[in-house]
Image (cartoon, rainbow, N blue to C red):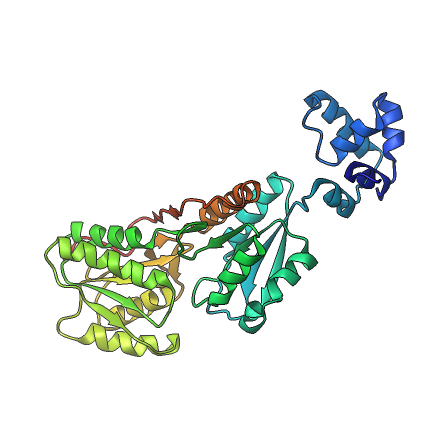
Length: 347
């Protein structure tokens, strides 16, 4: 009967062979095969280092499929995303962090892109798990995900972590509630009382959480909340913002859900002959500092922790792979802030 170790040893796609490396180092072939197959933990660090150094010098290349069969692990994680751009967002910093954390643990990353229809098909998840040979899944499906997906993943019993999505466990997401509260408190501490929360149309939980944080701060100060929602394309925000800023009761400060709205308000304020931040303060949310390229005005930005979300998600998945049945505790990641570029004391 062929064992996993023998299979991994006999199916090496190599320039040098296990037998040659073992003979050169005066080690047994089984020792060399274990080290090269990532199963050499019982051997000393010096032995493992000698084997790996000599294998590299000789141009040794292992057959990863054979090693996977022998070890029961593919050392691969899959990032699952949908085809609807409004339900998926994978920022560069987040993707880089996921890749780097997995790479540090000798894992590689695949990306599976499925439509909603394909994702909910009863054979879709088991099929792509076989085809992609993955040990675990990072799900970057941030809003309106198909409920059947949860059932499919549970039935497949595959380690899975949700990224930027709220669940009872096994998930990592930014702490938008606290971010909404903190940035509103900063404006209150600057003396502003007439503060509006502005957003366009979105179904992501962060819009609600940021607003709830804003309301918590306003209510704690004994002030009314003012929610301004404009369900129109971003191209129509400038006109809407001009009408808002021209009103007699125009807010002295704005908390805006995203940069597009903030930039439209900044432009409209200046069109009305007022200044940012001397007359009107603006704070927004984004993964990087926001700048109005037409004026050179930097905006005070509550920075979405994209890199840290990616890093923690990958670490949580590695933990799930080791203990698939254990529910990982929810991790919420705090925001950071730029300098007060577009926020100042109330005039």
